[in-house]
Length: 408
Image 1 (cartoon, rainbow, N blue to C red):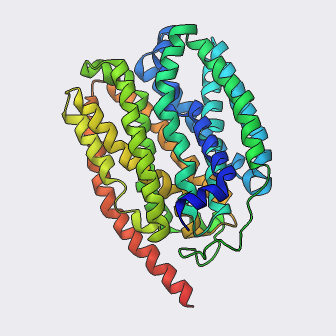
Image 2 (cartoon, rainbow, N blue to C red):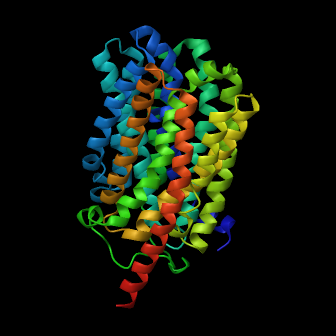
Image 3 (cartoon, rainbow, N blue to C red):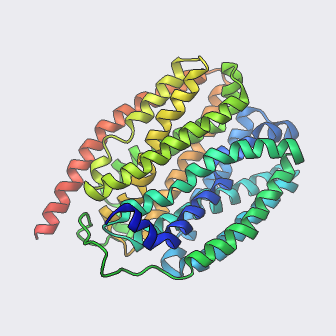
């Protein structure tokens, strides 16, 4: 089916998924870290202190997500939206009025749980369940919301802060959630998509539907996670310390914010390209390549301090993010089926959130004790290249297992 026809026939569900990922930005590290300097100044926190608090709150959200995430298997998407959008708005309001460390930690916990966690989880679970042979296309469109958020929200937030201050900017974020995200997404997704006679037959599918307990006993799941966790860990680490990075390299903050646009454009392009490749080849087949651009991006950031390096880094990061964002939405139903997809994905998202928690805390501590930040980033790049080789082993093993089970 031509992509234009696919978009036309499915615009309401795809737009709903895209808006969910877009509004997840309010709980993403790149957005929260835009207030990192103000938070550290007002609360008297060092890089390590704030990184530790952020890690604590994010770890708590990761532990909670497997329990909260199961609701997508039990209630409709529209009802899930009625829960998570207001909850995320309350967290934004709390950020605006918080003046105690305890409330700050609880606020970040709620932002991470309902923003990065549940908004993204709900979108990807819906796309994975509602589409089969066209799952790659559906996911690639829905994840564009992340790139749109990364492209426009940093610069919008920076200028909004100059206009009304950083706390009032969080109040405006809450208003956007309540008066735009909640009604619009609810209306778009109030009717669940059902298979159509015109849908093409599924080509890449799991031989059976795995339960969450079975998935957790599968060795290939844990090996895959060694690669899957890299983008969230590395991206969160770098964006969390972006103010420190800009100061370290003597870069212009506004120019660095502008470089997000380069990342967003390439992420968007490669999300769509990888959507086509997933439907044509399979998500599993892309596992060995998605970390190579990320590894190269880290090495550029670690060993080049010229201003143009930020744009090269963002470009390479965008390529890896584009491929991985589509890949991660299509991979799990392809390997483990769709019946228990909400439960399975909640574990995956929880582990990814756990990875985002470790990054800022560990690197912040290492910065405080004098470990070179560029050295840390370079080490991450080398790990990505090594993990790519491991993903080739995973691809071969999962493919062989699926063929054996299908032939029985």
